[in-house]
Length: 479
Image (cartoon, rainbow, N blue to C red; front, side):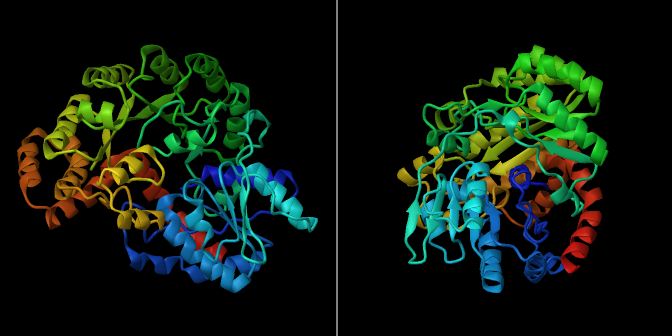
């Protein structure tokens, strides 16, 4: 999929007069859902290096989430050896554990927090052959190996002043076709303990972490995207697209007049209110994702700091269906203290929601999040496993990393929930029996079958678009 953060970096740097190109690996062999190494032969690391050599860059940049870090580090080492140019890495993973990342020989510079202004200042300094060791947001290795750790600059306040995301760098690879991803703001007002936002927010005390572009600015971008790429739909990736009713009231008529395409967005049980749902439905929304995370209220409130009752969640789902919106519910298994009894509650609660699709995940203790620190402190997460996480090991679809007494149950429930949600009534006793069996091949088979049921519409788009993406990617990398 496209990476909106990379697109914003590209557009900002281009606005400052720099040339930018993208080296794209679609991750066929390891896409967090499946690990199929034999597919890596279609897009090899050698092809990525070949593409980089052709562009002949002055600097190479990576944006990194935790689960992609091990792959990024491997590719960075090959690029460093082949091109011997500075490499900078940014994103949530190096922001969370900068000490662990910057010590790698393949990384010369590390960006903590937002990267646009820092990266542009870095390139200006390199062009003018100035000292780059004191640029805010950056950790910089000098020639002697000493690391200069600089303070954070304030968050960007006025997002309307930023250029629109550069979709062209992904479009050339066939990534952008029938559906385009857009973000209308940055940040999140909530304090969910398992989410990286709970850590990122703490980096900026006293600042407004939640920021939103004006409606007119968003519509201007959507018009440009509609005219240039002719999409059939949009997908708003904001954690809080539905957070502000007044913003939506202004957005709806302008979107209908200028765009009038179906879209998907995210809601929470608290934002899935009648007024908000009415606005997005009238604007053209077809489906929403809603995080429930656990069917047990004690886990939600005490462990996750999500203060919704079962009744709140069920009522939100009923309102969503009242407005004829498809609901994709989201659950996570493997939280500390969670027992099979509480996992059953997730199945039962999801049954009451009558979701169109259900996304199921395994709890992944992202570094420096409140819940990861809790697990480490209370013996649910070993130091050894935490070190593996900091090296990018595992996936929130495939790996239970806690010292969990019910690890088998975590894998079983994660495999079966999406299928159980869509199964006809006659099959549910059979699936309940499978849940009581020891984890094995049958659960793994059901997991494979469940992948399309996590979000069938999105799955269908990706399957249809994938052949074109592979062909275009190989053509560009081989050129």
